[in-house]
Structures are given as structure tokens and as C-alpha cells.
Length: 171
Image (tube, rainbow, N blue to C red; front, top):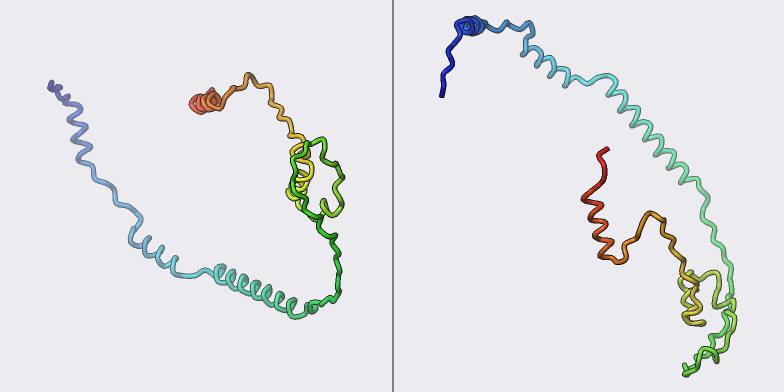
């Protein structure tokens, strides 16, 4: 280790800085803390008044709801008999080895495709009646021309990983 020669001017500055004492503060820290404690305990008029207003408004809302529930009309009982006649179920025909061309084609009756059925149930009835040819055509997917598409899922995964590693230019 090499020792630097000490400059006599720096020694004089260091000695004068060392002889300085901090000035006394004009603020009494104990008094400030005492006043802060007093202010935290003393409730303000606004807080007390705000809670009273909130409690009164909620009491009025509860009272209004109680009055509305007490004065609502009683439920009306409707006595009406509705007869729904369903057609007799079609006899079950055993499945015979027939070709599709030999099978009779009939339109679905209104009872089998009623409006009350779910879309899934209507589609199942249609497939059971007409076979897979009764299914609607699948929608075609149009890919935007954003460049060549990866051919396999492995290539798609590698392309996605490359995009994750290289997010692009910094913004």
C-alpha cells in the first residue's frame, strides 16, 4: 500500500469541520408528538355527523323496504287445467341390414322437432333419423394471409416458443 502525503490545507479544513457543533432545533419534538396524540384521540365534528347521516339513511331504506313488502298484493292462485295430448310413440322397428338408398326418406314431424327442444336434442334426432348425412356442413375456417402457416403442431409449438423468446423490438 502506498501512502499519500497529507496536505496541510486539508488538515486545516478537517480540523475546522470537526470543531463544528449542530445547532439546536427550534422545534420541540416531545411537544409535537404530544399534540399529534391529542389530535388523534379527539373526534372531529364531521366524522360524528357523517356516521349519524349514514345510519339514518340506511334506517330509512330498511323502513321503506319493510313498508313495500307489507303492502304488496298477495300472490294470485290460478286454477287452470291444461291438457296436452302427445302422439303415441312410434313402434320400434328392429334394425335390418339395409342400404341407405333403400331406407325410406320422410320429413320430420312437428312433434319430433318441436320448438321446445334444445338445439342439441334436435340435432341428435336429426342424426338418428338421417344418419351422418343429416348433420349440417361444418364451417370453413379462413386463415388470414399473414405468412406461411406451420404444417404440424410441433412446428406450431416451436413457432410460438420462438415468438415468446423474441418479443420484437423494444418499445
